[in-house]
Image (cartoon, rainbow, N blue to C red; front, side, top):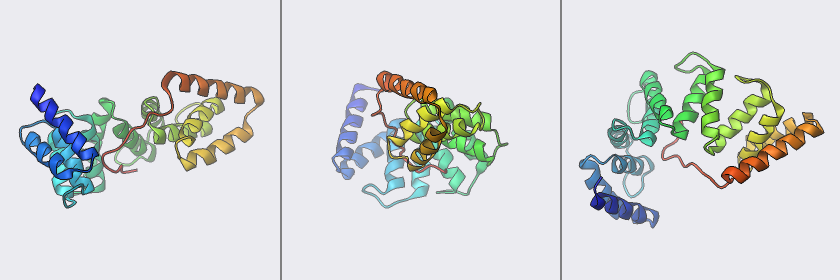
Length: 227
């Protein structure tokens, strides 16, 4: 990517954040047609969300796929979600799994989360709670709050992992601090069954996590998930 492209992409993001969708769209459209994956992904997001343009799932999917084929992880996750939900295309679970797997392999938290959901439910793939827990774990360690909530629940109930109230406490506490209501409810149930020693261990783990990573990290999806 040239310095000029980088400058234009920065201008587009700034315009978008300031609500100047017309300017952002113009820059991203031009860059997308030149084959810039980031611009293609953002253009897809504008059409998916109706930012300054009419909502068009078909156009959104077109640009997401262009970026996804270049290995842009966020776009891969969105393509997978759209094929799973049949947005802008016929529902195709096989394609959804393929794209979500690529996104997960590239470390995209939404790809990891959505693929984990499918493994946990056995939708499009054979049910595999262990694999679901692994995927949730990777996303949770990146600060993805919904994954932290799901992982905490799995530790609380021994689904796909060995039951561990201390680890359940850690992940549910992290998730509940960011508005995940189901995590708070599950946490209350876990705490009631914990010994004083377990509570102390859980609190220590939480402090270690907060000191290491901070709790203000957030992952924003550019398109709805199929969960």
